Length: 375
Image (cartoon, rainbow, N blue to C red; front, side, top):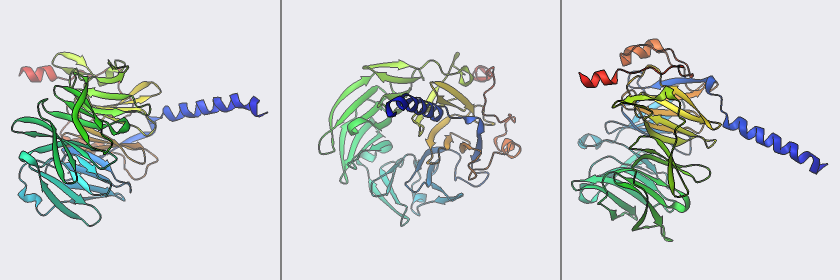
């Protein structure tokens, strides 16, 4: 009897997996958090992370850290931040101790402890402004930054800095992958740095692409995906080759320098393993659903781009924009976020009101980008 029921169990399991992968986004809605509704301290969103308690932490233009918990926003600001006139709080790295490392200030590493609300700073070598970073399971951190000589890669461990590379140009992103090896994307190519048994990294690296990537992520199968700086397409790495994804719907295409194409920028993975991509122009999301892609336009916005995409513990999708704060895409059953009010939002953005719907228009709208360049 057990043997006869086994095929039925396999069918049920397959159907269950298919249902999970085929997420229904028709019951999702948009919520906006910006300066106008006194949520975040600045509408230029740099990074969004969630801690183990599910609290959202957001860095913005300016030297402020924003916290969202229990439906309320709080701006956390260091008393010494006013004296740091250059830079901004950009990327947040949560260390095993729970202390935050916040990148972006030239010549300094900024640390914040959310438990006791204490700030501290450490000086960087050569007045480096670190903008990218990633931490491995040993607590060692790779940092990418800029100096007067150009881009550089440092390892930070036990309060010491070790230079790994400074000849390959700006660093776009750093991502830990299998075995805590690190992918570092420079302007002049992307390299794999292998972790030593003691948790450190050597200067020797394996080049895996001539391309530079804005974002690099690994999926549940350890396949590497990236959004390329040029030609701005989503790519995946298989059998030592990179392949471009060409089945992105035309509804997210944009007139970029006379080329009608999608312009990928930021990338993340949903809790079910599917990919979510934000566009650099036109304010769109493309979400992988059962081997196809669904696309969604951020309400009201026409010319803004997606700076960052983060998936919250409750599976809501948090989208940081360049100039218009945070857009949260969540289920209508999620009562924590209220549906956007287009009448109040439109004057804030000084844009034409667009109908809000998760379903993209059948025919993409041609934006007047060429005309603006020609004027």
